[in-house]
Image (cartoon, rainbow, N blue to C red; front, top):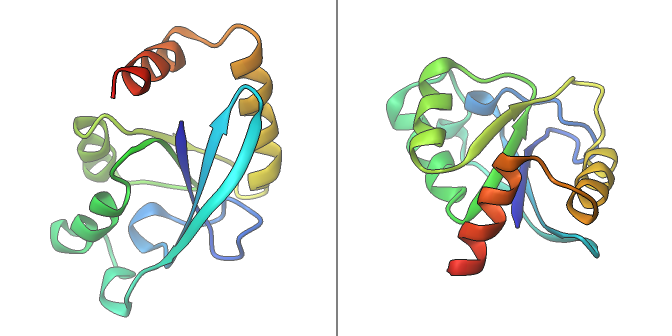
Length: 125
């Protein structure tokens, strides 16, 4: 499953979705995780949340199951859910690697129903 993180430093989940300048992408499965890519957004995409400025970010998340961020506005969250991407607000002190380790552990045991739906959907693709 592909997971994205809104982060300014690449270590913490410390960015507001609409204002984030960088996203970090990982593949996660019960065996572990691996870094896939980093995406930096152009200056015009990092400002206040608006429909135009969110389009590029939402398009960049194509294929992601989950995106973690420190904050997100209700409109952006609704648009992500409409694209079948689950937005999750984290604490700004949460580290990406800690969240990845928890995801791997959860996938290896008994994931909650919403994660199982993602896994079934991804397996069908």
